[in-house]
Amino acid sequence: MGMTITEKILAKAAGKRNVNPGENIWLNVDVLMTHDVCGPPTIGIWKREFGKSAKIWDKNKLVIFPDHYIFTADKYANRNVEILREFARDYEVENYYDVGTERYKGVCHLALAEEGYNIPGTVLFGTDSHTCTSGAFGMFATGVGNTDAAFILGTGKIWEKVPESIKFIFNGNLPKYLTAKDLILHILGDITTDGATYRAMEFDGEAVFSLSMDERMTLTNMAIEAGGMNGIIKADAITEAYVKERSDKSYEIFESDNYAEYFAVYDYDASKLEPTVAKPHSPDNRDLVRNVSGTELTKCYIGSCTGGKLPDFRFAAQILFGNTVKVPTFIVPASTKVARLLEVETYNGLTLKEIFDKAGCQIGQSSCAACLGGPDDTFGRAKDKDVVISTTNRNFPGRMGSKKSEVYLASPLTVAASAVTGVITDPRDFIND
Amino acid sequence: MEKVLNGKAYVLGNNIDTDQIIPAEHLVYSLTDEDESKKYGHFALSSVPIEKAGLPEGGVSFIEGDNWQSEFTIIIGGSNFGCGSSREHAPFALQKAGVKAIIAESYARIFYRNSVDGGFLIPYETVDKLIDKIKTGDQLELDLENNILKNLTKEEVHHLKPLGEVLPIVEAGGLFNYARKSAMIL
Ligand code: SF4
Image 1 (cartoon, rainbow over the protein chains, first blue to last red):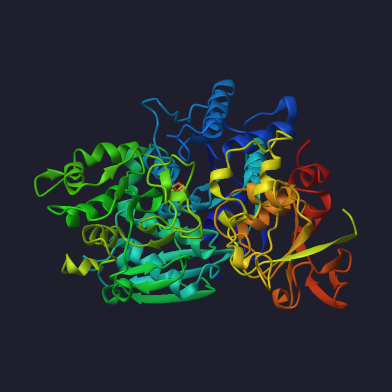
Image 2: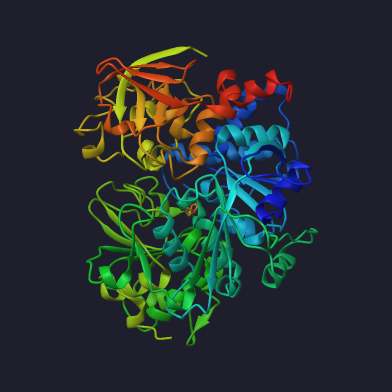
């Protein structure tokens, strides 16, 4: 029987020749990632369970990014970063990227890629549900809770149930008015928020392989929004070039067998899709932008591991160039690297930052910021009955800060177009293919 | 593991995500400090829209006033319970509030794992759609040996899906105890 890419990687990590969906296996973990929200409780459990003799199974394989609640006066949030700092010092964790230093990176999922921790064929676990993002590199990556992470921290091992796989093929060319975000929102509308629970979501097709690594990460990032265990895209030349620039580790490239079995296969023609949104209050509440255009907004938000990467800002700049925003518009580069690039990358002779400044946007510091609400003083947080359009990945009640607010999820093109008009706007009003 | 659990039902709908179970702004409190961690109980389920809190009527607060424990100790949920983030604070908050078991149509993977591996709650899956049959406040008896849920208020009996492969972890009280019992770790 053939195997999918996910099955092959899991088999390798379990030291087996083959594995079957539904089987529980123990995996050797290549990298464990944690952050300021789940790191402290993970460390707490690890100390409680392993006691005085607690040892990190492999210091080089632990990566810690404070990123969630960073620029806040909240004393509890700051205490969490202090706990990470102490832990990194006491246990000599080199891959710790402290706030307030040159090393600070911003949102963990993008930082993992930028810092060369995403290696094809490997297995990465993280204490964050969007750890599935790293699957864009032809690797197995998934989120776990604190207990599982503490177990990995002490043993380097964890159990997992081999998932069935669902394949999503995007044929054709992606028109200029669409981004990876439209593709994944489209899928979510089809399969809903539990359509891939305990399953792998594999992305394929020429439209997918035409995407940059950043855009591929937008697809795999939102696999969890369908309940997916992991999202995965096999590594190609674009992946290899990205990885080689950032790491000298050797890697193994896996791909699905032609005769591998899938739970389901979805075929799309990317050239026929239209700009898509998820309406309040669920990422699967899909509609076409043109059906909700005209909806009055009070805020626009471009940021997060989903929509705060360099291409997201390039898309936004295309529309914001020479325009001014009608509603408060918040720009949050996901990583410090992206923040620096905003001052370097140009469009029509202006840097992206100049374009955003001229358009009247507010630019925040790299972190998760209002993507998950956060403490009261968080940049861009939804207040009261705000109606927000955002490039983030979740719009559950209260997710961006206020239970009464309404959040629409959309591509950076749609968000930028809406920022200029103050109402939800189809990017095709600004861009033709 | 106890063999029978008794408690009052608190009924919720589909897609109860982790932001509704414990809003992100509260994730900053210590989970190990006895006193501070009570805040998790206090804020458990605090972002469920009030009209959907305690079905079928809704409008039933899970936690009263300044309390940190709930009078409801068995949660009846719909599909995709616990979707969203990986925060283990979610099953922890429910446990802190006094919840012993959840009985839902289906679960999101990470929440399910966290409940089992952390030894916080027993996540049972239903055979029938129970959110239409059980009312918030109904007195329930959960028979863990026979996977049966009795609604004492309505005198009805519901069969649940056996816990299957995770049963040994649930019985051991979590992943670490399980690994010790099976001599995987010291
Ligand atoms: S940016 Fe948002 S989705 Fe991404 S890791 Fe941060 S909180 Fe999670």
